Length: 329
Image (cartoon, rainbow, N blue to C red; front, side, top):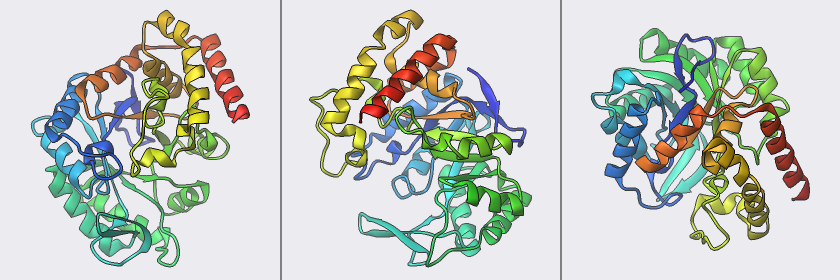
């Protein structure tokens, strides 16, 4: 396993990280077996994964609670990251979505952040959080100035409740404002070989300013594992219905591309998923690859990607195939 620094924080964590969005269950992901999730998280830690990522919004606190349970007796072995800024206690903030009768708002007011940090610490059963991120950035009509949000986060850091500050889903203009008020060490962004928009502006900015990138959804919600065939049917409420690549006509093209990589998988003695993770971990500016899993077997499959170093020619071949696919869609 390779261990990389979070920005300039001095904190190092595994390049392959465990994402726990699905652990929260709910309409987007369906029922989740908490005991199986606990086993998966513990298997990840035992295998050398030191970064565990969660958020209050993952199952309205459920993911944090499961992570907290799994890390009892293991807390000192992990770099724990969670988030703030999605608020459902009342109507403060700007409306974002509704689920299970709760109206969720984007809210980065200092007074709501003060509540969120204490709630997350309790759910996670810990005294501190290593990396604390704003989940989504404030928007009108309740757009808290970034300077005010940053002041609140710096107070938490000074109090020892968090070790370093990050953002998620933040564009370059957001990052510039945060840096004008303090230091951010990470930006968690959607990135996969099928979704490379961040390479244009965000990646160069992060490299220049030594901001780590946590890439989430690198396997496109399982599509890039090759295990979701044409006969796979999504339920009406699944989040994956919103992803264009899951449309039958696009899915077929993705599966054909992955099928063409079977000789590469044989060459490196790995699965297609491991091949994709290795490609992602090697991209410029990508510091951590967040791989979601609820089962120990899937965790162990992801871990093996850390031992793969792709040859330059193979990386170029895969990149060319991806670009050809995108041109065809």
